[in-house]
Structures are given as structure tokens and as C-alpha cells.
Length: 97
Image (tube, rainbow, N blue to C red; front, side):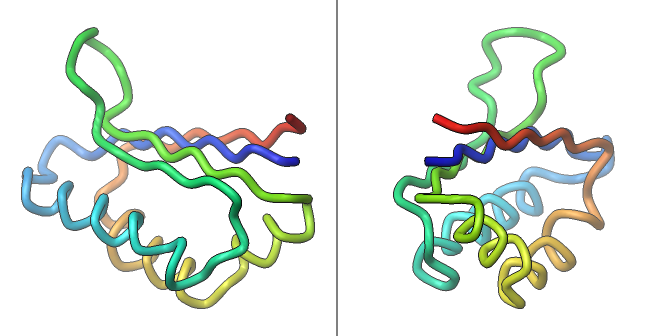
């Protein structure tokens, strides 16, 4: 199994509604793209200063399923419309579980 973890830090001028819309669009990916065995995304709880603003964790049965997800047109559309225009930084990792 492969786990995909992404941390998003929004640019300072990204308002709360835009952040919420990005999270909502990301949350639809399991039904719109599929291929994952587990999926969670949400905003930081605000407990520690300096954290990223949101995180996404997805699990896939194998690397091929992850690659299909990563290159799926709907996934790329969500990233282009809701994520990239509002990002200050992004960090990701994929690892075997």
C-alpha cells in the first residue's frame, strides 16, 4: 500500500472562503477520481504556530493507482483551479505502508 501526504500553506491573501472552497473541492476527489483506499483532507486545527494550513492523506493499493490519481484530469483541474493559485508552499511525500 502507498500513502500520499500533502501539506498546503496558503498565501497570506487567501481568504477563509477560498480556503474552504479548496478543501471542499479536494474532498470530492474520492468520488470524482477514485482509486484510493482511504482519503482525508482538512484544515489545520490551529494548535501550534507555524504549521501548514491544510493536509491531505490518501492511501492507494499500489504505485500505479497513485499515478492514475495524480494524472487524472479532474485531479489536475482541482489543483489548477483551487490549489495552485492560492499556494505559498506545498510539500508532499509518498511512502510504502
